[in-house]
Image 1 (tube, rainbow, N blue to C red):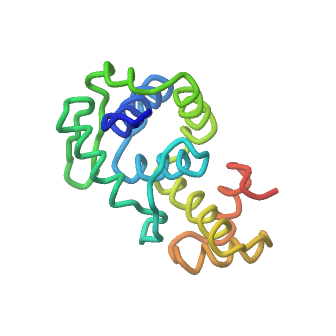
Image 2 (tube, rainbow, N blue to C red):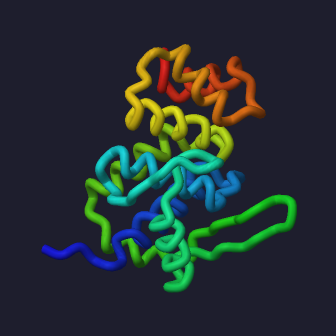
Length: 169
């Protein structure tokens, strides 16, 4: 069976809705969506190509899907100067294009990573990208590599985030 053109928007719509329900005060922006969809791709639920970018793994395909999701009315994207993007759920009927397993994986990722800010998710996903693509397994080396890519946060802060996310022990 051929996958629907609406699969990506359905995933994004369900993700935004679930995050907003579980964390109503959370700012869901474009970076947050990029990182959460990267985590979905790691789980095999989404099929997007990612490369390393300034804020961690980035996919032009996800950016296009997010624009498409807004264009079909599934989400609303607003920009606030000095605050960034705010993405809100608008029409959840698109979720019909997801199966129960896909919804469950999204819900589980929200439970696991939804509390993190976009900056923290950037650290988490960068470390996972480095580990997956460059086989960096030693936790101290991983923290050092992430810190070299993200010079603002300290290695101690990065270590705390990675421990909290259970990326390292």
